[in-house]
Length: 189
Picture 1 (tube, one colour):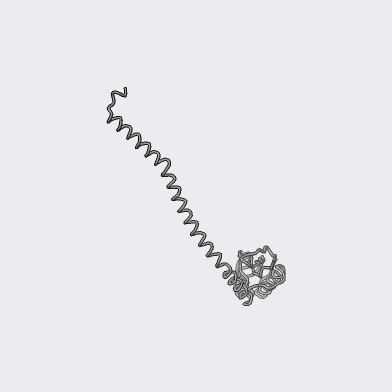
Picture 2 (cartoon, rainbow, N blue to C red):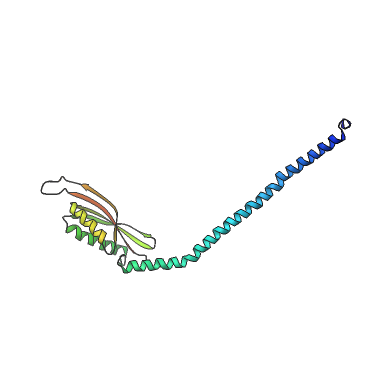
C-alpha cells in the first residue's frame, strides 16, 4: 500500500506530521511554562510594590503614635476627658451634672443608670441612660448642658414622647429618654 503513495507525498505528509507535533509540543508544553514564568514575575513585582508600601506605613507608625499621644494629652489638658478614678465615678458625675440641669428647668429625673462602657480608639467610653419627665425647656436645657459640658459629653440616642396635651397655661408634658456618653483616658497596662 505504501508503494501507491508517491515519495514527495510521503515526505510532505511526514513534514506535516512533524510540524503538527512541534506546534502541539510548543502549545502544550513550552508556552504554559513561559506564561507561568511571566505570571510569577508579575506576582513578584506586585508583591514587591505592596511590601514597599507596607514598609513605608511601618516606618510612619512611631510618628503617628507620638502624634496620637500628643493629641490625647492636649484633649485631656483642655478638659475634654473625664478624670474620675473609675467609670462608676465618671457616671455619677455625669448624672449629678444633668440632675441639676433637669431640676432647674421644670423637670423630674425619673431614673438614671450606667448602661455601658467600652474602649474606643485609645479612650474609655462611659454611657449613662437618663429617663426624665419635663417640658420643652427641660429638653433644651439638657441638650445645651451636654453641648457645652467640660469635660465633654455626647448624646448617643434620644427619644422624646408627649405624655400630656398642652393647655393655654402649661406646655405639654414630655418623657425624655436620653443616652449620654463621656470619655476618660484608658487605664495603662
